Each structure stands twice: as structure tokens, then as C-alpha cells.
Image (cartoon, rainbow, N blue to C red):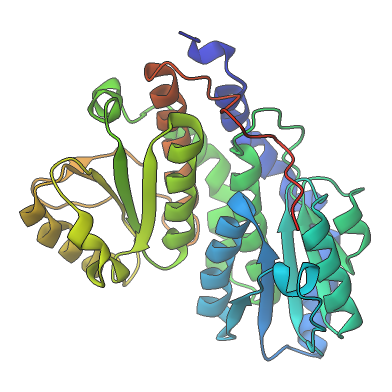
Length: 345
């Protein structure tokens, strides 16, 4: 069995707090440019375009932007341009493309089409020299540094914080700025209280699981489900705590554990309610900041802000996923059939 200290996934996930701390200075200039554009001509709508973990980060960003700006945020399917060659009429809109490598041809073509169509194109990338970065008006380098494990960890966390910094730039808030400043140390503190081996043990033989979230936490729930597929070979699905009632709960049973991510905002009560209601179906229910009787606690540090709380939950989960992968006899750094850079059309 591969030891924790030997896995790139564990090492890279642990680097996230330091990499996040670097962003404040590195992103100041491009974010100031974006804030100036926003103040001069605030867009009526925002578009995101991404795939994989980056798309989950974009879903987090969607809620963060909608909650703070009131503008609708839509996710553009890359194939609209890369396969169907549809012109984009996006005059005056903010177009945010997200990619760790910045190399996927479909995202590049979409960014070029958005710029031709009149949008301001912002690229959130981990390589400021990538083709996608060169196609953008403004580049936000997430400062994650090299990442070698196939499963994204620190780059995902750094993308989430980049979205929060973007929000803070266009809708200045001392609460958000303070939350960002506190976050690196909070993540370091959280790493000292992991989801223990007893939690890993309960997932060792699991074949399927559900992850529930709401608001900004929904994108993180989607990422958690993807990581269980990637590194643990476990089929997991993510749903909104509201959407789970529209069909998915029919598949819930004693053999399908559920992880519920607390929201630490006005959605919290609905998450607690769904945790209580799903107990009747007999599954083991695990909760991050879900104080409901019968729910197994997943230790998670409280960050004090609803936009940084999902980031702490993702960080705690990565340590668990890495340990679960090893417990199941897998290599978390090299999942079968996957590659670090994925180029799609």
C-alpha cells in the first residue's frame, strides 16, 4: 500500500494554504482592472465556461456572483462552439473561462468566440502562458504552482479562492476580504483535525454514495463526487439538497451513504431538514457542520463566512479521499485511464 507521505495528492493538497496566501498580491493588478471595467459598464449577465473540476469551481463561482451581484450566471457548454460552431452574441457580458492547464481546444475556441462576440473574457488558469490565457482580456493566475497528481486538489481550492477574490473586487466587502485573509491559517488548523480512519473504514467497501450541498456548496459537492470516482473508484453523485427530492432519493438505501455539506447561511436549515428526513431511508449519513441527531460528524473548521466555508470543506475532504484511495489499494496519484491534462472538443 502506498503511504500518505509518498503521494503527490497529499503533498499538493497540503500546499494549498500557502498558495492561497500568495494570491492577494499576485491578483491585485488584474482584479483592479476588472473592477474598473465592471464599474464603468456593469454587465447584465455573466457566462462561465469550463470542464471537469474547473466546471465545479465555476458552479461555486456562479452562486458567489449571483448572491453578491444579483446578475444571472449561465454555464456555456463548450460544444456549442467547438462542435456546433455557433456564433456567440454576448455583447457587454462578462465571460469567465476556467481551466487549470489552459490547453483544452474547446475552451480556447469558446473564449475566442466570446471575445469576437463582444464579451470581456477573463481566464482563470494555473498557467499564465497557456493558449487560453493568451486569448483572454484579463488573466487571473491562481498561483497554485505545479500540480502533478492527476486529481486536482490545490488548484481547485485556489480556483475557488480566485472566484471569491473576483467577487470582492467587483463588490467590495470588508467581510469577504477579512474571510479571505483568515482562510490560509484556518485551512492549516483544519488539517490537524482530519476525518478520521473510522470514517475511511466505513467507506472502504462502499460502491455508491450521494453528496448533497446547496448554494456555493453545490459546486463543492460536485467536486467531492468526482474525486470519489477518480481516486477511490466509487460511484458518487452530487445533488442539491432540494433536487434530491425530485427523484434521486428513490435510489437511496442502507448501502448508499450520504455526505451533506452544511452551508453556514440561510440555506442551513434546509440542509438540516433533508438530513433528518433521509434518515428514514436507512443510509449512513455523514455531515460537515450538520448538527442533526444520527448524523455522523465530519470535523470541519468554521471559517465564519459562507463563501469560504465550502473551501474548508473541500480541503478536509481531499485528505479523506486520498486516505480512502490508499485504503482501497489504489494509487491516488494515477487513477486508471486518466491523464493530468485533458484536451477535448
